Image (cartoon, rainbow, N blue to C red; front, side):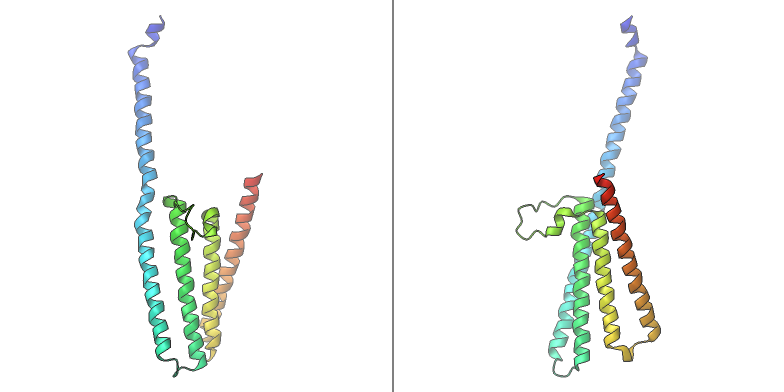
Length: 188
């Protein structure tokens, strides 16, 4: 009688479950592998970072060539431009390394002597906060450039830059506060 319960109907149901599980496993494998679609995006950001390095070197060379003809204000604006380019490059580096390590694949750098400390505790929340802080720094440089060159600036443009800067500050504070709440909830 127990062999009747192992009838073809029961075997068919078990086979369907096995087939369903196999289909699900294949689909999940495809979904997981889709993270590699992002790899070319990070490659593109690396190329953008190379272009920023090129732009930095061109601007630096122009400053060197014209150092004797530049007023101090123009020179300071040039230096602030170099700082701005550097901060955007830092932002790109954080997005490339942090994003790749968080969303695509682990970086096997445990033994690398130049491994950044922040890489040990990187997660999407940390990346967002670091990005917000970088945007605040970049916004600060743009504001400082406007203040240094205030006689040639449109006051409405300066007001918008201040408004945008305050918005970045508020966003960063809210992100940090949200991350702190989430970290507190994880500990409980």
